[in-house]
Image (cartoon, rainbow, N blue to C red):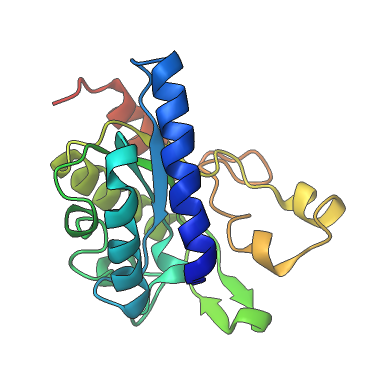
Length: 198
């Protein structure tokens, strides 16, 4: 979004990568990319920008929150995600290993008037998202997958974060709800965690 500042980031990425690799040659360094609607202007900018740092990245991380940062109808239904919602990473960063460094799906309705964001969701939609996520990530041979967050953080949101709009986007993405109720998606997570890697 800021070409002059990105020029500085390219220098930073090269310097940090080169220095760390000199000291720790086996260390694998990750840069995370926030995915949005495939083929959008934002993703075209990301593709162009990543090409400038690709030589200083070992693993490409993926941050994706389809219910908030993709433009499709009925955003709370993961079945409506664009066809290449995750696999677009192969166009952005071809021939690199991938991992999902940050993702999740709300298990409750989300309304943030300041962002014009109103999404209907429940724990069934969260479960369907995880089904889709695991299948797609497996198809990418993802090196790992990190969910944000394990537990809803309603108390943290109201007491410490001041009920701010930004952190509200993720506060109900836990596999465990604020009252410590385990959601259906937790069972699915445990099933996939128990599987051997393909």
